Length: 229
Ligand code: ADP
Ligand code: ADP
Image (tube, rainbow, N blue to C red; front, side, top):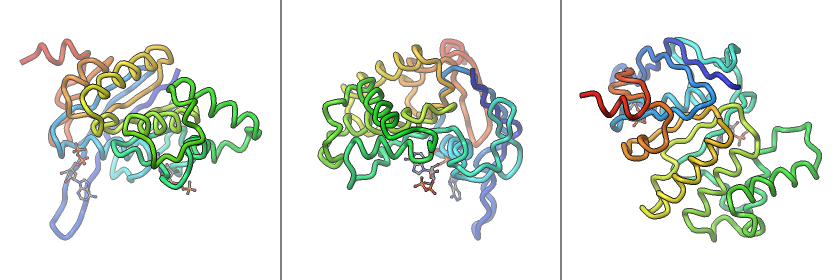
C-alpha cells in the first residue's frame, strides 16, 4: 500500500516574460491505482509529474508519500521511477547495463541479486533475449520495454509515466497498452500516467484527473468523467 498525496501544490515559473502559473493549487491522492492526468498541451501535466519526481521544485504546497514529505528530498532519495516518451535510455549501453543502472542507488543488493532482478524484470517485459544487445539497435517498442524494465527494476513506491506510448505506432501502442494494464492490475502500483489521448485514458485509468490551465477540472472513474457534459 502506497499513498501519494499532493496538497495545494502550485508551480509558478517567473521569467522576463512575467509569471506563468503552470500548476494551480492542485490536491490529489493516488493509492495503489493508476491515475491518468489528462488535458490539452500546456495544462500542467508534465510539470506535475516532474514535481513528484523531484525534477522540478514546488512553489507552494506539499507532496508526500505515505505521510512523509518528499518535497525536500533529492530525486535519488525518492522511491519513484519515471518513464518518458522518448525512452531516456543510455544509448551507448547494452540493455542489461541500462536496466542495471536503475539499481545504481540500491547499495544493499549484491551483484548476483542485481543480476537476478534485471533478468526477472526483463522476462516480465519480454526482453530477456535482448539483454546483451546495444540499445541503439532496438526498435521503438523494444526501447520502451527496456525503459519500463529499467524503471520497475527498482521496485519503486511510485511509478510515473509521461506519454510513454506516444512515440509508438498505433498497433504497438495498443499492444503495450494491454501489457501495461495487465502489469498494473497484477501489481496494483501507485501510478500517475500522463497522456493527452482520451482513448488511452479511458482504457488504462482507474481514475482520470482532467486538468485545464493548471487547475483540476474533474476527477473520477473514466466512465463518470466521460459521461458528464
Ligand atoms: P503539459 O505537460 O500539460 O503540456 P506543461 O506542464 O509542460 O504542460 O506546461 C504547463 C505550463 O507551464 C505551460 O504554459 C508551459 O508553457 C509552462 N512551462 C512549462 N515549463 C516551463 C518552464 N521551464 N519555464 C516557463 N514556463 C514553463
Ligand atoms: P545522480 O548520479 O546524481 O543520481 P542521475 O544520472 O542518476 O545522477 O540523474 C539524476 C536524477 O535525474 C536521478 O536521480 C533521477 O531522479 C533523474 N533521472 C535522470 N534520468 C532519469 C530517468 N531516465 N528516469 C527517471 N529519472 C531520471
